[in-house]
Image 1 (cartoon, rainbow, N blue to C red):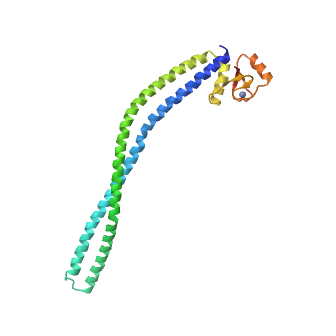
Image 2 (cartoon, rainbow, N blue to C red):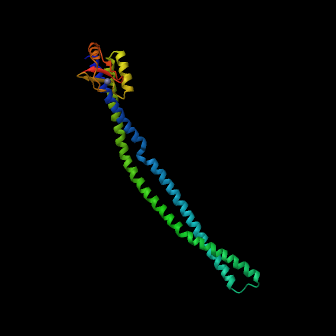
Image 3 (cartoon, rainbow, N blue to C red):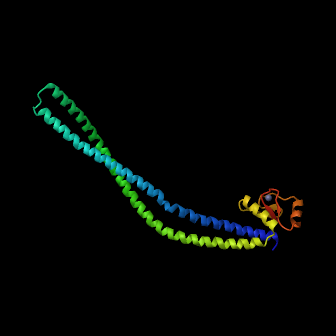
Length: 233
Ligand SMILES: [Zn+2]
């Protein structure tokens, strides 16, 4: 095998290796996401808090309602019971009565929307809890698959890496260093072929002088585009 052929083969291996690395990372990313469960749990907790708050608010209003109804009834008993002996007392109780009536009306108005809100949050929490349960079950199964997939892909990567290192060991250091630098900076393409005088990397026709130089060289030579090394097809 010529140096150019070895480098072309190495490039093929490196491209497969990059693909295997990507496949491995995909599994890792999915594992890290935990099937979206942490986010769902957080939303579930928040909804639970909202439900509790709405319940507390409803209970508070209901208790206020009972207290105010009592107060109004008592005041009315006093107002209409005939026991009041002077105008000042009457006026005071009338004022108290109208204040209590106003508060009662406010509470009565607020109670229905609070109950609706509490029911809404209760339903939301119930739905989320059910969704969470389903997703937790699905994730349990998926987790087993992913762990086995991760092990498989890890092994495949390591095997390919071994092949890669064996191939690289046969290539002279200076050629390998140039190749590696280009492979990294040129996103996985270091070697391109020249087909009928045209660089397949940048589609530019090589000057005759360059072609002669390429044929005389012991390995690939840099293309004028500067992004790749050339070898003849
Ligand atoms: Zn080129």
